[in-house]
Image 1: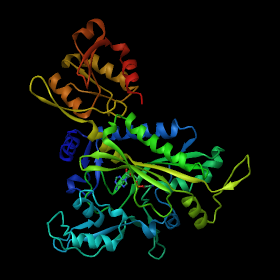
Image 2 (image 1 turned 90 degrees about the vertical axis):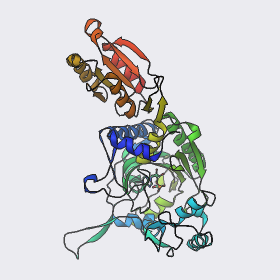
Image 3 (image 1 turned 90 degrees about the horizontal axis):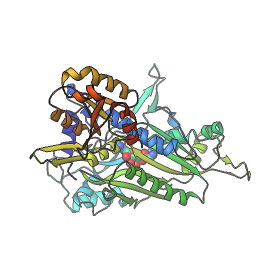
Image 4 (image 1 turned 30 degrees about the vertical axis):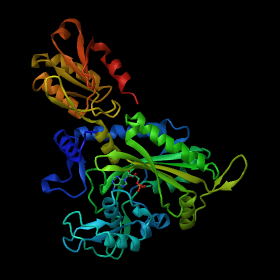
Length: 455
Ligand code: GAP
């Protein structure tokens, strides 16, 4: 793999994929803005996920729940009491770190801090002289836990203010709508609810570009099923999550399953799919068997009966939930890493090329007039193609330089309009990966490209 984090950050900034957040004010830690190319790629990633897990799933439905939810939701879910990270400060340079991350980095992944208590982590750090990644000293404060939820308040007068939280996950919007969706769609268990939306976490540790940010998008799917069938569905979603990545073009040797060593008290099984990011093997997505915990808790805290009544047997029960959750931004980083390539060409030059699956590439085609005086014809072709998919148009610079610019943002097809186009109506189509060129009738372009970009 040729991508490093620095190379990706530079390419993204220079090519309009991702910029540092609030850059003209010196930035804001762990926030990033998507540019014209990046927003297209991320939208395509979200569309591909929605198509696979909502549109094509036999019995799944989408929702778009509010970001701000009744605070009781977060009491029921356990986030107000236990959504925290073990933080310690370096007494010397005052930087803040996650104790579990320090141990993982020090032991090069050989020690799993997930199975340790705070006291055990403190002891490990002391006994192994784990050092601060910033200043190299080994002198930390005891572990303190910080809740990761962003708080804000609601109401106009101070007395009337109530605490509200920016949701730290989208999942609760799916759980609280379980009855609404089941009744309004008149569907039967098993069925699924999918959602894509923003989530917020007050992460203080280094973000590693868009790997860990304080504001990010999640794509979450909850599958509601009967107890006893949950094991089978858990295996199903483990495989479906894997297949989705492979179908997006991921090399399976860059993916691996990682079962959780320490399960949350309510979980029956949990595993991640890890990807070989430039920072090493790290979580890309999670699949969890959450049992009937979430619906039972919402039943208890809201006073609303969350039972499902089987219309055939009359049996009433609270369904089990298999959750599949993946960050759109984290998947974007994985897709950037996977796509990045530097190829040595016959003429001794190196070309940077992003081998995105055509389905997620920002622009499906770039229309390039060989010379500016062919612009009118080329623009007409561009306008026609743009009715069917995202295209770009470029007439600045040599054709070779224009090809390179498209390679760097991963445009799968470059359509060149030349003097023969005027004569016989054909254009050249250059394939990004093979750099092979074919000549086809300009009227057949839309069909030719549409066929290749389908997911
Ligand atoms: N509802 C379950 C849940 O939220 P999670 O493991 O905390 O589980 C799910 O998050 C996914 O969301 C992760 O696998 C990752 O892809 C993404 N994610 C979590 N925290 C993130 C952050 N701070 N920045 C970017 N993506 C994040």
